[in-house]
Length: 304
Image (cartoon, rainbow, N blue to C red; front, side):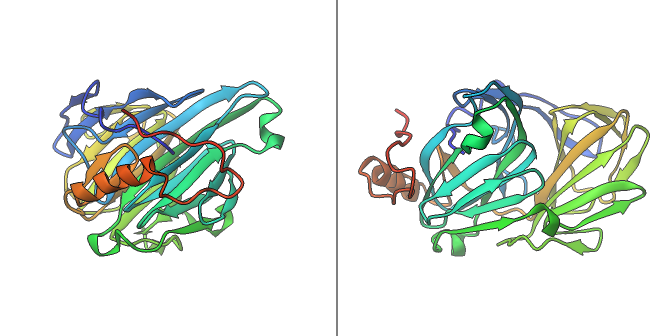
């Protein structure tokens, strides 16, 4: 998805919490044209959580017939995008020729590498009637050795994502390894991404990782002496075996992994090198990125 992250340092409410909590981030609203997202990463106080450099919650948005997601072609470099839906559908197209409907529970992994262009729209079957959309979109920084690899697209249907129960709590291991289960989703670095649905009163011990961020999609949890509500992102300290308890029916997403080091983010570009981002800007302005087959007429211009 296209975004402007150059102004991501402001309008975020950040507080400290218990000894298991480093930061609590209140996301800020960002208008993407036709619908808004809640953006939690990056912020001045926390640019990355493991290899994750960007975190958006899309929706829950309700669209009348004829309206919906309509993100024109735009470029990325040196990162991988991860799209995961709870409700609705997005039609992904990219400059490799991929054309894939993303549905709830699927994992859509697009590796930009040296450069890719994609659009996010809707099929007519979806757009021509009232519909809803709710999901998460995240960006992974690629290791320096892999930043300029050939672009690639991977799609993992919901049925291929491992699911299990921990103390009667349904958990899905989306990327990486947790609770002794490994996801088939390709990763380039030590990466963690799970989701879980807790009923009121249930508890869950979170899997360990060098860095972790806990996002409350809906509901409310207690973490030691802190109460964390919907749409808050908790950056956890390195303490092991952190447990949470649901105060209400709650859906969580946990991201993390090993620290990937310094990354620069400007518009849709992420890189370990500032000069690479400047080159990408020039290439986009000059029309040197590839086109998206079947979606060649429109594009998002480089912001001023």
